[in-house]
Image (tube, rainbow, N blue to C red; front, side, top):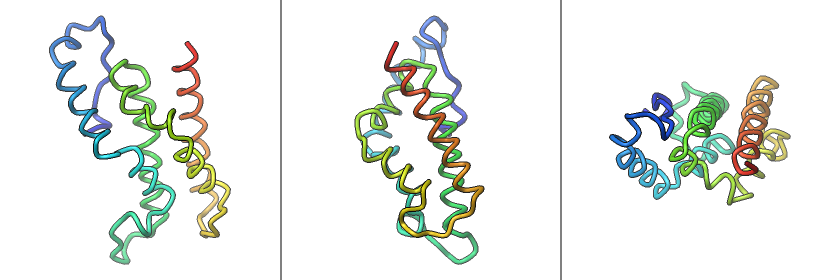
Length: 135
């Protein structure tokens, strides 16, 4: 559902109609520590996800990294969306966990594709956060 959210600018007529509901939705996600839990799935899927043997931890991690990338891409362009991304700018440990996962300091045997996906997502994330908070 989150990925399907269309960014709304403040000048859009729809913004005033659904701004409160969107803000309430983002507020509830923040209360659930959504971004933190998503990063936990990326960095330690074996402890954050239900594993039944048919899906590898790396697959959980890759999908979560793609969700994070989509969130940053869609939510960084709107004022209320940035509210959901705020923990990434205020909690350095979240970014550190992503970096540690990329450089494989935990000893997990993830593929090069997984590391490249995480690197791309983290680069995109940091670029957008930097651009957003240095305006």
